[in-house]
Image (cartoon, rainbow, N blue to C red; front, side):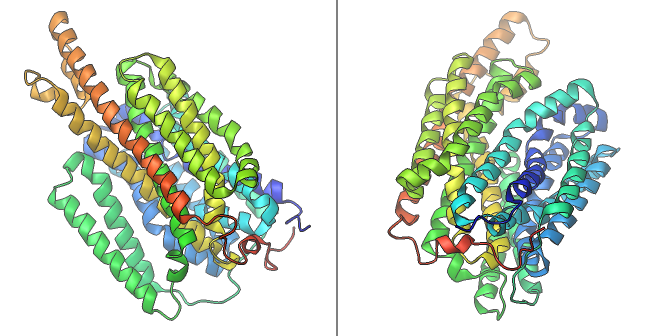
Length: 509
């Protein structure tokens, strides 16, 4: 039996190190924002873009980066991306103005977009089909752990160092990853030389950037804002032109037959709903822990450890379950378990203490760990290995879109439900968020402050129930999509297993 590259597990460890640092950066800055606001004089909108510039650029450049990695070599692009990411992190750590941090975060997004697709596409080449699902499960678990542990690491660093430490953290990890990649990771590329599709590159970057800008801006500006609608509609129009370009180009960036196949649509749709429900739920839970249960940023990070622990336990079991009952059923079961956890958070956690939150987080993590490996495996098996860079980039793009929509939509649902549940006597300055209400009652007489804050907590509990219920429904919808669209063992297309066999272009070290 073909076992893959002789050093495949060491390669996996290096690639997981690389993906861990980029996934941490999705959430690590959240706990540092109040400190950065004070020390840099950053306003609310500047703080928003310090966080979102990274996601916006990352998702906007991913499709282009995946195509370039297939063309010029996945190892080369992986190392270029790591280097850019490390340099940008160093620049961000010592920035003196908010715009400098925003620029550094955008440059980090460029770096991340070039090495994220490479990590998963290289796995396809170095692991045999029998071991690939297990490897992808570990890769997915590390990605999820980075997102979950980001706030905890940020809180630890802020307790002992200055805000720039959350950027400095990346530099030694990047250096180690660069050494490991250069030493043991083999090169691979698409054996068919393709010309660069410059119009497609521009259209995909502008279109994805426009959609992401609109989604990210919606919670603060409103979904009916002229800027938001212009960005969303303009981005969708440009993406339509991009797909038209791909349909008519001689050497397109994307194979649309692959992209619109049942297998790819099922896996990518499921992944989008999974990330929507995970990040949307995490957005609400973080506020519950800090604003209702009054946990410090570090304590709130520690309180999410059950989620991380459940992912660690369930991820290695996922390939075993998939072999026993099939990938399609395993994915649906994982999403249904996530929905159960979100249901606990919706109907038992609001107004209660921490225990129901912990139970909900365990179910959420267990379901995610169960679903991520098989859904990634199905997606990466949807096309030939020479297109693995583009497949991985599309996978990462779907995850970023799902995450961005999850935070934006659930944030809007929470804000709307919270405002509608407040009594009319509550001052206008408390009607937008619970955090705003907590600030507004400072200096008021104790009895008045307690009454107003109690009303705000009850309104937040109502908003949490509604927004978590939306997340649970989204996870269940993802389970239905998996059952309908993802092929079962009998329906798998010919060559499904062969799609992940190592190629001759992967040179053993």
